[in-house]
Each structure stands twice: as C-alpha cells, then as structure tokens.
Image (cartoon, rainbow, N blue to C red; front, top):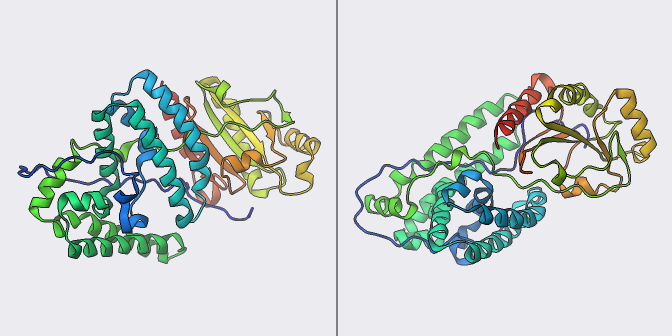
Length: 377
C-alpha cells in the first residue's frame, strides 16, 4: 500500500554475524567439509534455523579474491549468478517455508557450477567461508555435528538459544513505539547468548576441532557486495526524456533506479531529492532512472505520465512500466523505492519509502553508498 512508509533501510536479511574464535592448540584433525552445504543431508532437521550464506558469499569480490578466481572464472561465475539472481531476488518476499526451498535449489545449482569450474582447494575454502558466515548456527548442520561429535543434549541447548534469537527478531520486527527499544535490547541479549554457545555448550576438544574445520578466519561481516545482480530492464513501449536504456549498456556507471507513481503523495516527497541527484551526480558518472509503475487508471496513460513528469521538472530518463514487468522482476513492493546499482551491475543498497520521513536521512545514506561505489573499479 502507498501509505506504508518505512523509516529505515530495508535490505535482504543477509546480515552476517561473525564467530569470534581464539586459536587454541589443536590435537584432533577433523577432515574439512567436502564442499558447500547445498546437499540435503548437510542441513538436516534444523534446516529452517540455518542461514543460507552461499549466494551472498559468491557475489562478494572479497570472496572471489580469497578464492583466487581468475578473470575468466569470475566472468563465468557472474554469468551463472545473473541467471540465479533472477529467481533469488524476488524470492526474498516469500515466507520462509516457501523461500528456503527455492534458495536451496539455487545453491545446488551454484555448487554444481563450482564443482565444474574451480579446483578442490577453492571448493574447500568456500565451504569454510560458508560455515564462518553461518556463525554458531552451522553447529546445527548434520555434517558439522558429525565431524565434531556434538551430542543430542548439546544440540538441544543450541536449538534453544537459536529459537530465543528467532523469537526476539520476530518480536522486534512487529514492534513500534516505546517498546521497540526494549525489544532491541532483548534481541541483542539473545544474540550474545547464542554467540557464547562456543564457550557454554561446546567442549574444549570440540572447539579445537572447530577451529581446524573453519580454516583461516575471514571477516564476512564487512563484505561490500552481497546482494544480487540487478535485473535487466524489461522492454517497454514508452520512455520519457530518453531513448530506451539497459543496465548492461550502463555498466561502468553507478545507477540509481527508483520506482514511483506520479499520483503517489509519498513519491512526491522524494522528487526534489531525485532532481538534485540528477543535477549534481551525473558529472560523477551516476545515472538516475525512474520506473513509473502504475496503480491508478491515470497512471496507465503514458501521456499523463509525461505531463506529470514535465510539471514536476523530472528531466532524467523515465520508463513507463505499464505491465508492471519491471516491478515484478525486481520484486518491488512499495512506491517509492530507490535502488543503488554499482558499476558492475550489482545491487548495493535500497531504501523503501520517503527518504526524509520524520527526520530520516535516507538521501544521505544513498549518497554514501554511491560515493563508495564510485570509488571502486
């Protein structure tokens, strides 16, 4: 609904919680995992509690560098990711019970690509990075439980801690007002308790084995590029202020894509910011593109869209998305929404709702992401 305004940045819930490990002297030497955990028996009965991290990791340049992928491997990987991302990005909108099977199928395809295109050492390393990114929840994986000989009594403690975090997250998401701060503190407390499971649940010997299993520590919490490659624009009949544009033709530039409707009051609140961006950022290599996806009858008339754009002084390229094909491809849910697409075509951030709603500084946040993207090759 138009009136649903989000006051903070909503991103795919791919926040990485890092494991903080001491480096003890290890005695037993468990064998490393055979590869990323897309095989069904790796996740097991606690599958719903275990975060899926393989796809975000494969998108990150830092991970590609860590794996020492060649330029040809990176190009081939990006071609595969572009195929998978068409399904992955819209799937974020689904309930977990529908989303997780889709992501699992995509991970299986990603693993199949890896086995055909990288060597055994690279397979081993991406497996280690995946476990590190899954944090304490990796201890619920069947393969990890077997390798560390985690007992059923320990598993139940881990499940209890995980469920407490899940419940606290659900309570925070549904909260508003004064209680929100208390619920945030409850969530932070639950997360800390779950992280301490390495000390409170695992034995010293299991911790020794875990260190070996994970390999060299890698900071997955600071990865800059963990979201999908932006969906290519679907062809439409009408463009305003421009000939038809494609994201592929704009590679090498940072692109700001915003969805709007000209009769949407909340969209109007962002127009002055869009105009400022178009004026100030284009000389730096930033392209602003509007996608007008209709809700009302008037918004389905390209001539009315063009007149409204002229009246509001919107001079940047505008796509008239009459059939909502681009809205669907992006899995968009709200007018207005702004996406930042980097020089290589990856989505880096997005903001839903008015950028300055009730003191929010969404425009500044977007500009910081743009500056970072501009600094990259």
